[in-house]
Image 1 (cartoon, rainbow, N blue to C red):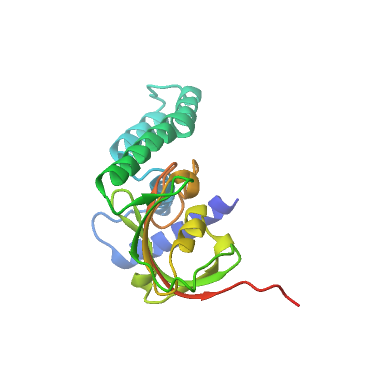
Image 2 (image 1 turned 90 degrees about the horizontal axis):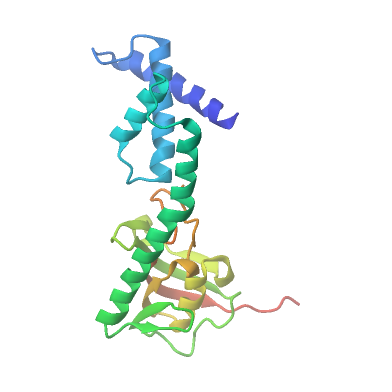
Length: 231
């Protein structure tokens, strides 16, 4: 129901836009607007699921299915997609992530490794007398997060403000990594997928994080508020 409502809303917006803009390429009817809105809805979902997909092949499959000229039975197609996205793609991503982290570990003498597999580089140690020690400590930070290909998926620097949170409210790689520096310190974390978003990733974030994707963070610890038991 929610998807239908979304499609109808997009259709109404698209129809208004088409009427306003005009032009030879504009859809001529309400059904044309509905068709275009369906394309927007499907395309947005596909981009969130897998941004590396060849959209021209998707269009070819849509045309074949619509014209009942399938080169693959629908049930077979569904089974193939299930196997690819739940087995093969996660396995490929896992192998690529492990190779990426191994390269970082082997070719950067400043990088160290914890027992959990977290890789880190201390840029500035900060005040060692003021370090997070409890998972419930509050920290105020500036940070930038990247995928292994260097694409930025989140950055407080871009937003121009600090962010504050309890260490037990973030991914495990962050929880562990923030305890490595003191107030005013800076650290670079290379977080394995099992200490980040795991085999599911975050496909619906603004920049999708795929399954078994390692993450790279540059973090500056601005301030700490140690946890204290309530009276």
